[in-house]
Image 1 (cartoon, helix red, strand yellow):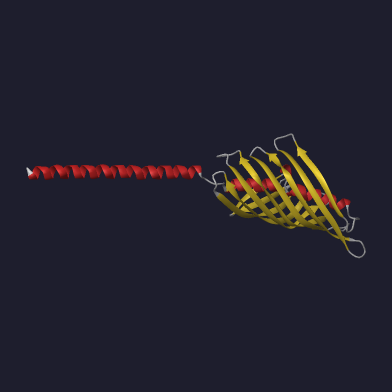
Image 2: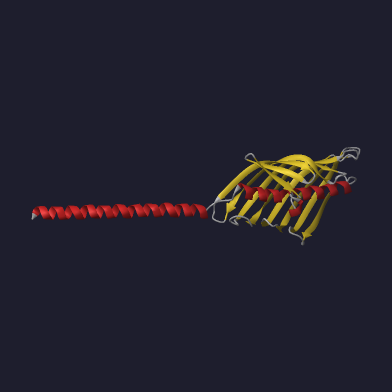
Length: 248
């Protein structure tokens, strides 16, 4: 009798242990499954999406850096004889048709520095902008500000040369892939960006760039790279060895 009782308890013990082990395995598998699915949901912004934001911060078609350089070149040409005076202007720029649209309000300030003979030496400029753009790949609502100096003001100089910094921050929605929404800040530092006076376009120069931000799930992202202006309304952005062409 005693032996039968022992056998009974042993059989139930091992049966219960087997059930516990199976249930524990199911729990672990479920945790792994949902962890992986959680990883998919929490996927942060890709390098190509970051490159898209940077490209739009450069492109004239989205009121980016190259458009501000062109506006600054127009101001430089118009105020060569205005030494020492501080000027400002408020401008609204809208493109309401086509596959790329934008609407921005810009506030400009500038001052021409001249030598003792009243010959222009450098033009100091700053601006802020506030607005939005929409393209087939992305939409954005953002603000930007820039500070730079312009040289090459001599009549015989073929190009205006820009040095300075520009930042652009706001919220974006990607229209590709997972259609991520996120906030970002782009910082660009220009080195000898040249604007050809006859061709009326950015012809050469470079900039280093960083972008950082947070996606809609609270995940942060950050990328850095280099921009080379090629002329012909094109530039090349390089991030981690990958080249992204930019055209406007």
